[in-house]
Length: 112
Image 1 (cartoon, one colour):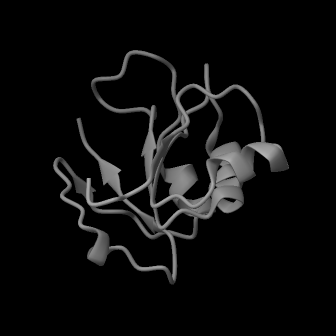
Image 2: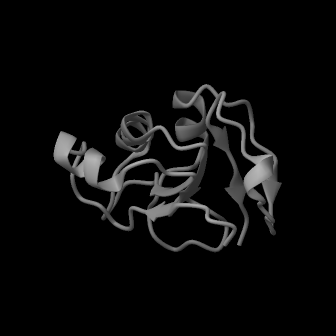
């Protein structure tokens, strides 16, 4: 997809990445990271991993929604730790390489 490099952390169970893991991941354009705790990492751990990887865009996942039945945390704590204002939630996202800036990590929240 336009040569964009994506990384999906899934239900990662560790609190931080080793320097070897960060090196293996390399330069990432879009990072998908769980933020709601339970079987994955919480907002603090997710924000720390985002800083380790330093992607151009991060899309939080596995957080509390009206449809979610698990006891996950809301996305707001992650947004706060990332220094993001209330992010406009989107139900669809179209990304082109030229739209990604290298200045600051963008945080995009997708709805279900």
